[in-house]
Image 1 (spheres, rainbow, N blue to C red):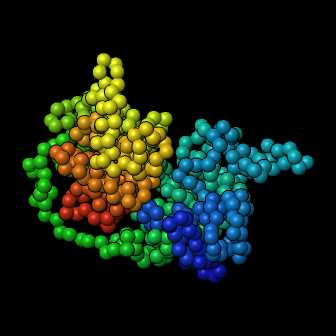
Image 2 (cartoon, helix red, strand yellow; image 1 turned 45 degrees about the vertical axis):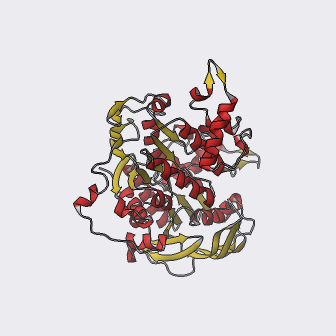
Image 3 (cartoon, rainbow, N blue to C red; image 1 turned 180 degrees about the vertical axis):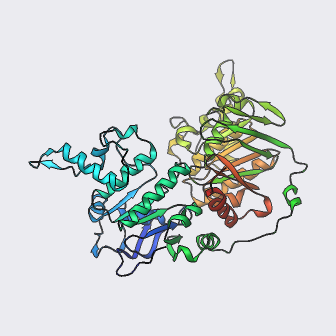
Length: 511
């Protein structure tokens, strides 16, 4: 832990950002010093990403002042302006151009020239070599196409690109999401080298072990406000989670027999044993019981969606068993899963859940046409009857002949759910079921999920919203990098406990 004396490098004062119905940033004031590594933490929607986008010029602020090294950033700050001031952001999805070589990416838009108009490639490659050597990236060839580099090498190029414009502040947004532990250690060494060069680093992460390993200070945001900024060495993960949630964590003594409270006599709807895809999923085993809503929690990159897709047959399992009601099944494709009464609601409803060129009633009957057709002919009256039934039960706001593309996100999701209900599935996997949906529609979808599970069926809910998992689930499994690393039983279900488990259990090195 280093101490920072003198005038701050970065000063953010009373910054506000308002969206219709939402105050994304509420009077945020924050400062950083040269060479400081500050972890920025907060739940989804806390405002940390909005603040960083304001700082990096991706969006404009409504009011407030930002000073970098004493110079005020303009209200109409843009990414190019921010770069010129010395602020760079490295997103999870890197912004490099894969078809260009390393040097061309590092000096994109500010290439050295001869006679003011011809690019001096020899000088550019020499300068790129200098920037990479600062990071001890001696093995990266400045002539190599970026598409040939590994992800850690691309991150090095991104940082070299920032240093090439005399960057003073680098923002790293979940930089270790797709890295191995060895690659993560290398990234940390790189951050330490930046620190020695007096570059300030904002490190956005939910992995608590990483935060305490690499940061000097921790800034916590909640509901658009900066709650606190504290020295890392003076706090712990429990205190940080309490700041993130605004609630004290509950600590309970668990008895061994509590693990069997509601499951001793329950019927197992589905059992997965040692599921592996040979790439990302590692020996996943779990059971789903009748009448249960089982939640899957985890950080970005935990591979929850990948596990669900493999179980559903959308992706391939290379090893493992899936059983439904005690009968071993082979889901080689989604069609096999549907025959085995398993449904999957993709997180990408527009591309993988709906046919946007079809009407509401057509989408509802799309999976199972047997009830509405005879000898190759469709019965429009039966289609309408089925649609009317689900329109009422799921409260779809729209007409049968209306194109589904014209609906709100919440009503589109209700159409997708109706489609799977009509298919007769006994187990439904809901992947991010309320992403991009308003509060009222969320509550209705939660009721639909609970009602489905209570009718001698079961549901799996994958969600990045810990409040959602706490509200709708009976049990929660926490995943990290393709493994199930923790189970939260019914008497431990709370928003605070789920988040605490994600940032601690879900951030630890897996064996």
